[in-house]
Length: 344
Ligand code: DAH
Image (cartoon, rainbow, N blue to C red; front, top):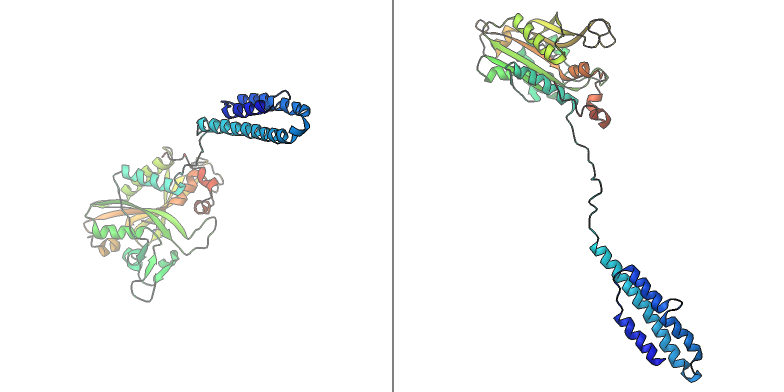
C-alpha cells in the first residue's frame, strides 16, 4: 500500500490537463467512485491495526493533495482560456452618441445672409454693447425724442452724454459701416439685440435681427422694393408676393413695413395670418438724409435704402413655431426637430 500511495503522489505531480474536459477526467481517475485514491481508501479497511495510524495519515494527505492538484489544474486551464480569448468583442455594436446640429435661429439667420450674399451684399458686424450715439443719436433719434420709447433699452452705464447700452437693434451697425467703409455700401448685419421686454410667446428680451443697407448714387424706393421682393421669393417660395404699408422710423424717410403673402393659406386667410392673407416680416425705408449726414455722406450725392428684420419672426413663419420661448429654452426635443433642416 505504501508503494501505491507513493506512486499516486508521483502521478499527481506529473499530471497534466489542457482543457476542462481533461481536468474532469483526471478528477474521475483519482477521486471518482472508482478512482485510484478512492480504491486505496477502501483497501485501508484491510490494513493491519498497527499500521492504520501511519497509513491513515498518509492516505488523508494523498486525498488532500489529489484535491489540491485537481483544483490547481482547473484554475490553470481557466486562466489560459481567459488569456487566449479575444480581448474585445468586435461584433458588439458601437456606442452611439448624439451629433449636435445647428440651432433653428442660426439656420434661418444663415439662410437670410446667404440670400443677400447671392445679391452681392457683404456681411458686417458690430458690438452688442454699444453707445447711445450709434444706437440712437446717429440714427436721427434726438435726445429725449419719444421715438426712443419704441425700444425699451437696457442701459449699462448712464449719467453721461453718451451712455453705454445693449443695442436694441442692429441698425447701429449701419452707422459703424457708413463711418468706416467707402461707398458704395451694400451690407447685411446679422446679430443679437436686447430689449427690456417681459418674456412671453410673442416677445423676448433677447432676439436676433438682420439689418440691410445699400447706399450708392441714384438708389430709389423701387430698388428697395425689388430687393425685398427677390429676398421674399428666395426665402418663402417663388409664388410669394409682398406689400408695403407706410410706417415711421426715425432713420428712414419714407418708411414702410413689409408684409409677405401667407405661405400657408396662399392669401385665403388662416389662423397664422389671422385671416388677412398677409404676414409682417420687416421694416424698411430710404435712409434719412440726416442719417447719411451724421456719418459724413453727402445726401445730395448719395441715397440709399435700409431694412431690418427679426430672425425669430422669419423662423416662426417658416416653421409655424409660434411661441418665441421655444427658440431660447434649448429643449433638446425641440432642437432635434431641426437636425436636418439646413436647406434654403
Ligand atoms: N431697427 C428697426 C427695429 O429694430 C428695424 C428697421 C426698420 C431697420 C426700418 C431698418 C429700417 O433698417 O429701415 O425695429
